[in-house]
Length: 343
Ligand code: SF4
View 1 (cartoon, rainbow, N blue to C red):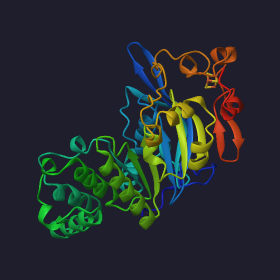
View 2 (view 1 turned 30 degrees about the horizontal axis):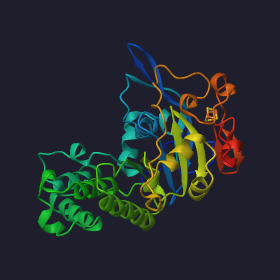
View 3 (view 1 turned 120 degrees about the vertical axis):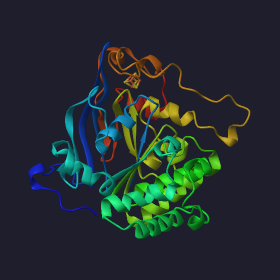
């Protein structure tokens, strides 16, 4: 748990969720122009809840996460607007030393590539123990004991014997467990996992997802799972936000999204999931490429790839239509998508 945050940072007026991102805009200023990487993103996660943020690379999902963590490179990045409220306090208005306290203790993050996130020249136990020495002021011996406990908790076999091993001595799955141990060391209230299973084989992916779900249940954390793979989150997410070209294009509780997607991009992603019952059939792929953020298409950013496209899509940016209390879709023709009437 973290200390009570200073009132000077202001209090939130949003939904009251544990972590709320509201109308966030992030840009990258490059020599060739301004790339709007995050364009009005709004989402939230509560204690004990899992939000999956889904999208292809370049959709803005990881940039949003880095902005929440306060680790975005500024410049070239620039936060052009919006708010990120943690327990009602806007993190974007906090001085850096206050934000540093929240990183790790309030909100922690697991990165996609454990091998480059871990320091190759220090034993893994030393790296986990460092969290306790720096943030909790523990002695070397106590911090090491805590590191072994954590390695046990994330199910690293023979943790006591392996505490002095180096990252390269572990398999990819075990290194990801060590990253998870480091991220939960300070009991964060929100954990952001950015593509935590991308580099792992399918069996290990399932084990890591199971571990994250178990840790979340035990400590009632809010969990934000960032992924490009809808198949990975079906069993663990409560709700999904789908991102495309820096915007949220669909929000839905997980089972509703799988049953009845209302955005053609989500529908395409679902149809791209390999299915054992369709063995021998060609796998569906969304045609075309993700948009170039420096040259975004006019109107709906998805229109060059969309089988439902009509004239209106080329000229008018679709707003995020509310379909029901918890469902929304940024598609002019979401009703047709629901009915399955492609043009
Ligand atoms: Fe497709 Fe038009 Fe909907 Fe965009 S607004 S997703 S182009 S139908």
